[in-house]
Length: 215
Image (cartoon, rainbow, N blue to C red; front, side, top):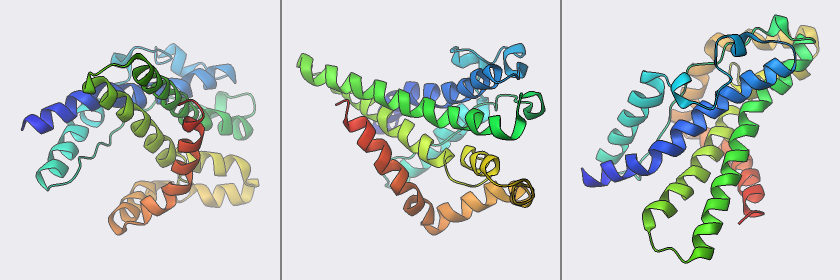
């Protein structure tokens, strides 16, 4: 039990900020491209309380962590925040601008991973011996890289799916968009079969390379 509590303490701040700032970035970029919906709803904010979903940000990650620990695993964390409202029809160029709005979330996670990497660098250079802060910074890097990679999967409604939709010709984009209702099922099947991590590995490797430049 102490091990579980310690893991939750280490991951709590990195997970909350990784998920909520991901959503805030979508709203911020949507506003830049003409859609003020998220801003009007007060969702373009660095305050995590505005983005936390009690189930997706708190309950589900805690249950997944508890279950994985009880089953003898290293501990897994996964969750989501309240989706930021984006009215793509209000964007100046809806189909083209969708790419930048979608890309904003994963980009925010990459930036946060880099900031946590700076934290690791400061930790090593300062000669600190407090292991908790090292574990938290390491968790911050890993959580953000995983969230970035997962959201870049080309499966709608994930950000990667939105990016692909934006790049496809109109007719192909329409057909591609029709798989969106099944997106979550597709991701769960990929996870259950072990294919998900194979697909994520190239994106994770890219992220680790970028983060490594700042260590």
